[in-house]
Amino acid sequence: MSHLFPNYARDEIDLVDGSGSYVFDQNGTKYLDFMSGIAVSNLGHHNPQVMQALAEQASKIWHSSNLYTNNLQELVAEKLTMGKDYLAFFCNSGTEANEAAIKLARKATGRSKILSFEHSFHGRTYGALSATGQPALQAGFFPIVAGFEYLPYNQLEPLKQQLDENVAAVMLEVIQGEGGIIPADKKWLQAVAKLCKENGSLLIIDEIQTGMGRTGTFFAFEAYQIEPDIITLAKALANGIPVGAMLGKKELADSFGPGSHGTTFGGNNLAMSVADTVVSEINQPEFLAAVTEKGNYLMEELTKVTEASEKAVAIRGKGLMLGIELNSAETLQQTIQDLKAEKLLAIKAGINVLRLLPPLTISQEELAAGVEIIRSVLLG
Image 1 (cartoon, helix red, strand yellow):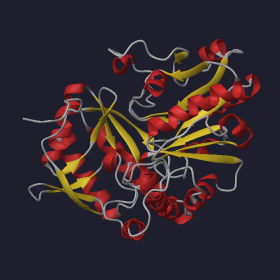
Image 2 (image 1 turned 30 degrees about the horizontal axis):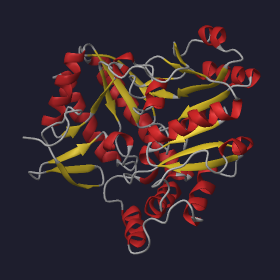
Image 3 (image 1 turned 120 degrees about the vertical axis):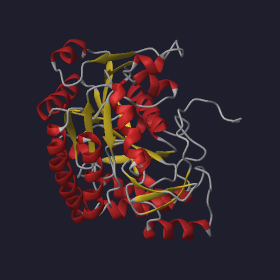
Image 4 (image 1 turned 60 degrees about the horizontal axis):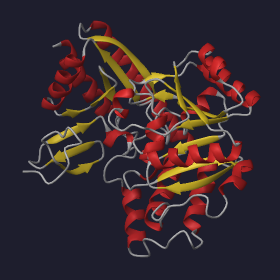
């Protein structure tokens, strides 16, 4: 009998160890990891640099409270903002980063309405859940936070109709992850950014799943030539150590003065020491170029599989964040189980999309092995 709430549909395997692109269950069975803890372990498992940073800080102070100066936070903030006009706030998770973004947008603009998009996912705490355009996730938790409206993704006219003087911010993912790996159209996203600026509304880009090099650029929005007012991060920021971040334009600083927002654990020394190493490892031109190359290979090979498979409908995504749309939810569930039987782990997105999120450090040989397993399952 379990002593845990049944809020997760858990698989029976218990992952107890990992190395590089592989994980091991309680029976010693080895699996090729094409989910990375849901885009968390971007540098793979037991990464030597990450382990060294964690061990070094573990022998020092772990937590000191945000009532004191934390130079590690300053170091990570400087690397994340990359010399641009942003400030950082550190927290513990993606949903907390989005909560901070919502509060900052309302405080800074004096407006209350937040526009987000159908099929979006921004978290499960009340503010972030209210920004999430998925009624099924909100069911049973009403009343949710007021002031949120959901628009069709990649459609401009509905946004124009709703963007008025009451809109504090437009909040979106560059690629909708939980919603089914749905990329933003470049012209649409650029138009959204332009309309926000003209209306005095802030643009919040949720990079919790797409950030940290996942799509081949450090932030996914960089490929769209836009500049958000607020950016949220988490997941891969410390490769599995819980941490989140909100980056906001410097002109918003007065809206987050002392006492306006806070967190006990956010940005503590242990998390920041690891995040400092992770950001340094990922945000290198050679590393990001390699992610793009691997992503192109994976897309090319799996496009051939998708086109040949009666089970598959389409493939989409960018970098090492790909989704194969299958012909039904039942096919998806069976495919995930068949892949697991062949010792490859992957997860769902949306209703019928197979989501593939291998570590960014995965080798060409490991990618090829993964492609062969997926081919055998989808063409079998």
